[in-house]
Length: 187
Ligand SMILES: [Cu+2]
Image (cartoon, rainbow, N blue to C red; front, top):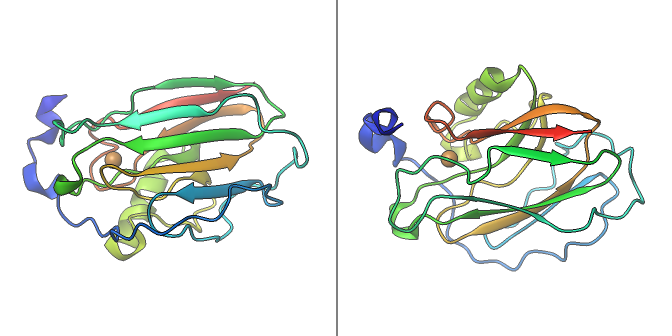
Protein backbone atom coordinates (compact mmCIF):
# COMPACT_ATOMS: atom_id res chain seq x y z
CA UNK A 1 0.00 0.00 0.00
CA UNK A 2 2.98 2.30 0.11
CA UNK A 3 2.31 3.36 -3.44
CA UNK A 4 -0.92 4.85 -2.24
CA UNK A 5 0.90 7.47 -0.21
CA UNK A 6 3.04 8.65 -3.09
CA UNK A 7 0.68 11.57 -3.51
CA UNK A 8 2.74 13.05 -0.72
CA UNK A 9 2.10 16.11 1.34
CA UNK A 10 -1.53 16.43 0.43
CA UNK A 11 -2.19 13.59 2.81
CA UNK A 12 -0.64 15.50 5.63
CA UNK A 13 -1.87 18.97 4.94
CA UNK A 14 -4.97 20.79 5.87
CA UNK A 15 -5.89 19.25 9.14
CA UNK A 16 -7.79 21.73 11.21
CA UNK A 17 -8.41 19.94 14.44
CA UNK A 18 -7.77 22.52 17.10
CA UNK A 19 -5.23 21.58 19.74
CA UNK A 20 -7.44 22.35 22.71
CA UNK A 21 -7.31 19.81 25.49
CA UNK A 22 -10.70 20.51 26.94
CA UNK A 23 -12.19 18.19 29.44
CA UNK A 24 -14.96 16.22 27.85
CA UNK A 25 -18.25 15.75 29.63
CA UNK A 26 -18.80 12.50 31.51
CA UNK A 27 -19.66 9.56 29.35
CA UNK A 28 -23.04 9.19 30.89
CA UNK A 29 -26.15 7.47 29.60
CA UNK A 30 -27.38 8.87 26.34
CA UNK A 31 -30.95 8.97 25.26
CA UNK A 32 -30.02 9.43 21.62
CA UNK A 33 -28.02 6.29 21.24
CA UNK A 34 -24.80 8.08 20.58
CA UNK A 35 -22.34 9.82 22.81
CA UNK A 36 -18.80 10.97 22.48
CA UNK A 37 -15.99 11.83 24.80
CA UNK A 38 -12.59 12.93 23.73
CA UNK A 39 -9.28 14.28 24.77
CA UNK A 40 -9.72 16.81 22.00
CA UNK A 41 -12.24 19.54 21.37
CA UNK A 42 -15.69 19.27 22.83
CA UNK A 43 -17.82 16.88 20.87
CA UNK A 44 -20.60 18.40 18.93
CA UNK A 45 -23.95 16.98 19.77
CA UNK A 46 -25.55 17.12 16.40
CA UNK A 47 -27.78 14.19 15.75
CA UNK A 48 -25.86 11.78 13.64
CA UNK A 49 -27.02 8.62 15.33
CA UNK A 50 -29.79 6.34 14.39
CA UNK A 51 -32.68 6.02 16.75
CA UNK A 52 -31.72 3.77 19.56
CA UNK A 53 -33.80 0.62 19.72
CA UNK A 54 -31.65 -0.55 22.60
CA UNK A 55 -32.19 2.42 24.88
CA UNK A 56 -31.86 1.39 28.45
CA UNK A 57 -29.77 -1.65 27.67
CA UNK A 58 -26.33 -1.81 29.16
CA UNK A 59 -23.26 -1.17 27.10
CA UNK A 60 -21.92 -4.54 26.05
CA UNK A 61 -19.06 -5.75 28.16
CA UNK A 62 -15.78 -4.25 27.17
CA UNK A 63 -14.84 -1.39 24.98
CA UNK A 64 -13.67 -2.01 21.44
CA UNK A 65 -10.24 -0.48 20.96
CA UNK A 66 -9.42 0.70 17.45
CA UNK A 67 -6.12 2.35 16.76
CA UNK A 68 -4.34 3.89 13.83
CA UNK A 69 -0.77 4.84 13.15
CA UNK A 70 2.36 4.93 15.22
CA UNK A 71 4.65 7.72 16.30
CA UNK A 72 7.06 6.81 13.54
CA UNK A 73 4.41 6.17 10.95
CA UNK A 74 2.76 9.34 9.79
CA UNK A 75 1.89 7.59 6.56
CA UNK A 76 0.19 4.61 8.15
CA UNK A 77 -3.37 4.85 7.00
CA UNK A 78 -4.75 1.63 8.38
CA UNK A 79 -6.86 0.73 11.36
CA UNK A 80 -5.36 -1.97 13.51
CA UNK A 81 -8.56 -3.93 13.10
CA UNK A 82 -10.31 -4.45 9.79
CA UNK A 83 -13.05 -6.81 10.96
CA UNK A 84 -15.25 -6.41 14.00
CA UNK A 85 -18.25 -8.47 15.01
CA UNK A 86 -20.65 -7.36 17.70
CA UNK A 87 -23.83 -8.91 19.08
CA UNK A 88 -27.07 -7.19 18.15
CA UNK A 89 -29.20 -5.50 20.75
CA UNK A 90 -26.42 -3.91 22.75
CA UNK A 91 -24.87 -0.52 22.78
CA UNK A 92 -21.37 -0.58 21.39
CA UNK A 93 -18.62 1.43 23.00
CA UNK A 94 -15.59 2.11 20.88
CA UNK A 95 -12.38 3.88 21.78
CA UNK A 96 -10.45 5.27 18.85
CA UNK A 97 -6.82 6.27 19.28
CA UNK A 98 -4.56 8.10 16.85
CA UNK A 99 -0.99 7.10 17.55
CA UNK A 100 0.68 9.24 14.93
CA UNK A 101 3.12 11.90 16.08
CA UNK A 102 1.15 15.00 17.02
CA UNK A 103 3.79 17.07 15.25
CA UNK A 104 2.73 15.48 11.97
CA UNK A 105 -0.84 16.73 12.32
CA UNK A 106 -2.32 13.72 10.61
CA UNK A 107 -6.01 13.68 11.38
CA UNK A 108 -8.02 10.49 11.48
CA UNK A 109 -11.59 9.65 12.30
CA UNK A 110 -13.69 6.50 12.51
CA UNK A 111 -16.95 6.81 10.61
CA UNK A 112 -19.50 4.02 10.46
CA UNK A 113 -21.54 4.00 7.26
CA UNK A 114 -24.23 1.91 5.70
CA UNK A 115 -22.90 -0.67 3.29
CA UNK A 116 -22.67 0.64 -0.23
CA UNK A 117 -22.55 4.29 0.87
CA UNK A 118 -18.79 4.49 1.38
CA UNK A 119 -18.06 6.60 -1.68
CA UNK A 120 -20.96 8.93 -1.00
CA UNK A 121 -19.86 9.57 2.56
CA UNK A 122 -16.28 10.20 1.50
CA UNK A 123 -17.55 12.63 -1.13
CA UNK A 124 -19.84 14.48 1.24
CA UNK A 125 -16.94 14.75 3.68
CA UNK A 126 -14.76 16.27 1.00
CA UNK A 127 -17.50 18.75 0.24
CA UNK A 128 -17.84 19.61 3.93
CA UNK A 129 -14.18 20.55 3.89
CA UNK A 130 -11.47 21.29 6.35
CA UNK A 131 -13.63 23.63 8.42
CA UNK A 132 -15.96 20.73 9.19
CA UNK A 133 -13.19 18.21 9.83
CA UNK A 134 -13.90 16.55 6.50
CA UNK A 135 -17.22 15.15 7.63
CA UNK A 136 -20.79 16.01 6.75
CA UNK A 137 -22.43 14.98 9.99
CA UNK A 138 -25.85 15.38 8.39
CA UNK A 139 -25.14 12.70 5.81
CA UNK A 140 -27.92 10.15 6.39
CA UNK A 141 -25.59 7.30 5.48
CA UNK A 142 -23.51 7.93 8.60
CA UNK A 143 -24.49 5.65 11.46
CA UNK A 144 -21.95 6.83 14.03
CA UNK A 145 -18.65 8.65 14.04
CA UNK A 146 -15.79 9.80 16.18
CA UNK A 147 -14.28 13.23 15.92
CA UNK A 148 -11.33 13.87 13.68
CA UNK A 149 -8.42 13.51 16.08
CA UNK A 150 -4.75 14.21 15.74
CA UNK A 151 -1.81 12.22 16.99
CA UNK A 152 -1.85 11.53 20.70
CA UNK A 153 -5.60 11.99 20.99
CA UNK A 154 -8.39 9.54 21.60
CA UNK A 155 -12.15 9.68 21.27
CA UNK A 156 -14.65 7.27 22.76
CA UNK A 157 -18.14 6.92 21.33
CA UNK A 158 -21.17 4.85 22.23
CA UNK A 159 -23.71 3.91 19.63
CA UNK A 160 -26.19 1.31 18.60
CA UNK A 161 -27.27 0.13 15.20
CA UNK A 162 -29.57 -2.50 13.74
CA UNK A 163 -28.12 -5.86 12.71
CA UNK A 164 -26.28 -5.70 9.45
CA UNK A 165 -22.94 -5.22 7.76
CA UNK A 166 -21.35 -1.80 7.94
CA UNK A 167 -18.15 -0.22 6.73
CA UNK A 168 -16.02 2.01 8.90
CA UNK A 169 -13.65 4.43 7.28
CA UNK A 170 -11.70 7.64 7.67
CA UNK A 171 -13.00 10.66 5.77
CA UNK A 172 -9.76 12.65 5.87
CA UNK A 173 -8.86 13.27 2.23
CA UNK A 174 -7.37 10.23 0.51
CA UNK A 175 -7.21 8.06 3.62
CA UNK A 176 -10.10 5.80 2.62
CA UNK A 177 -8.55 5.36 -0.81
CA UNK A 178 -5.27 4.49 0.91
CA UNK A 179 -6.99 1.66 2.75
CA UNK A 180 -8.18 3.17 6.02
CA UNK A 181 -11.33 1.10 6.32
CA UNK A 182 -12.84 -1.99 7.87
CA UNK A 183 -16.03 -3.96 8.30
CA UNK A 184 -18.34 -4.13 11.31
CA UNK A 185 -20.90 -6.90 11.44
CA UNK A 186 -23.72 -6.65 13.96
CA UNK A 187 -25.62 -9.89 14.34
CU1 LIG B 1 -7.31 8.82 8.44
